[in-house]
Image 1 (cartoon, rainbow, N blue to C red):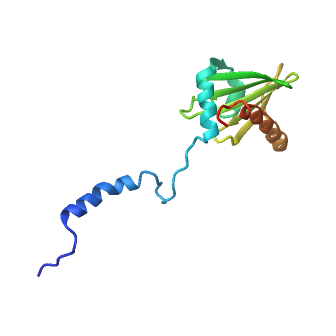
Image 2 (cartoon, rainbow, N blue to C red):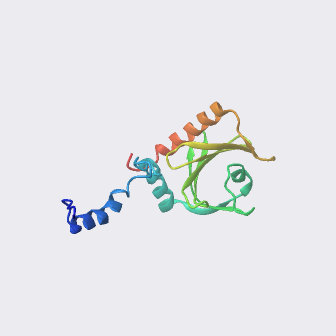
Image 3 (cartoon, one colour):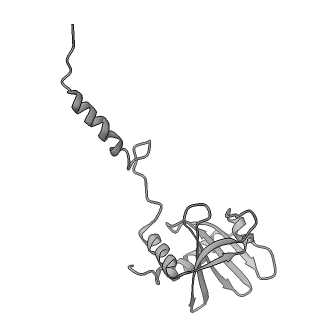
Length: 161
């Protein structure tokens, strides 16, 4: 006795070929993957790539943020501008094969650096005195406030707001 199911082999083969295409935008749990770049982050990346300059950053402060190049200087693409309260610099780092921003500015004899992803989430903050060693900023309120000031400065300069 044979049992006939109402599917043709062609329909089954077609569905089998299209099934992987439907899974491309989803992870294994069925939720959509989020882009790693926010629209504003994408515009800042392009601005830095188009108008910034190649530079090397000393590894000490970045090593505290988890960015290392085996003790050597870190290659970055930088953009700098003067603000009312000093010079602001944003560095695009790609050493870990992903885009990351390092925002920094000098406050007196202290350099304040913030590591951020391209969605502008602050990941780590470091203070680096002119004649001293860098240290992680443990005061999260201070670090977040300074980070927000620095990204607000750059948000005003990103084209296509």
